Amino acid sequence: MYEDWSKADKKVARRLFDAALQAELQELMQQFKARALAAAVPDDMWATQEFLYKAGRELDRKYDYRYSQLDFLFPRLLNEGRVSKQDLRAFSEPLYERILHIASLWTRDDGEAT
Image (cartoon, rainbow, N blue to C red):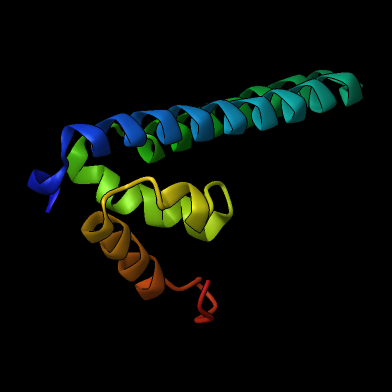
């Protein structure tokens, strides 16, 4: 699957990847600032540290810029609302269709389609 990435698709992927990652990092920064401002006791400080550690690990797992992983990242980002179908239209038609197909297969933990 990932062998199908053209040069143009790779450029689009990098742009969408970077934009989604930066947006998610900004959200994380806002959450961190809110937690830091709300911290009243030392335990709050350690809870914030744990929150950042877990969030960092999740971002590292999620944002893996290997083409073999991007086939799964973009459907996830679509389902999370971090990229739109319009954004994905910049990909070649076969890649766009593959991303939509994979996105349609994913379901939430509660069994509902995303």
